[in-house]
Image (cartoon, rainbow, N blue to C red; front, side, top):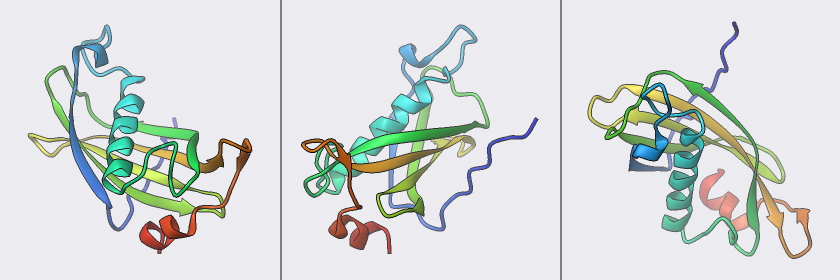
Length: 141
């Protein structure tokens, strides 16, 4: 079986730690496959907030997650703390990839890698728009 490959960026722009909650655990006793996307969203929200943005307002436009890919590497269990690092991958005129690396905060062992395709979106006009220039100048150069 071919595995999803998610190369890490040369640099990371942000990191935060998130606890694995009881609701993140599945019947197998480890973090469920749906939980990692929720945790990545929380990390993304924290990254944006630290930068003065929200998912609905990045220099006047919002963002939409257009796609996602996840590579699970190790289990995480209730009570573990994951450290999420976020960097930028491929760029296009209207979007980019956010790359996430999740590691066990205690051991440093990699738990998962994710990438989400982010598209900038004008919610008022319901259309995709170019990456805001100030965002691009700050993070995409």
